[in-house]
Length: 137
Ligand code: ZN
Image (tube, protein in one colour):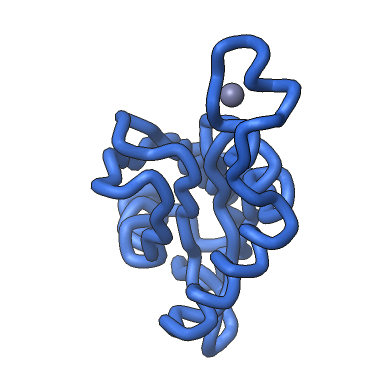
């Protein structure tokens, strides 16, 4: 089995941001030379997420609103007793999960028509990274 590892770096302008990364991951898959296998895309942080869904701006606004309802930014999280102020970002990350696995078929990611890979930042304005690990033949 062949493996290939690379990293994507982010420093978002806003605290919360949704970044489409499908093309960057596809490029890493192409460089890897893997024709049949899978690619793991995993945020290396506890306040960010990686997910697969539609690249539609209305939906992204809906996701942001839904996360804010379930895990609102507020001052009274117990986590803040440590001096942190990002309790909501941890919870938002748990809701969308930190990683995805995408199948690779004939050298390309085997995504459905509307499937796009997104990096979701919930505590940005600092340097963050995502590991991309390609595995296969
Ligand atoms: Zn924290």
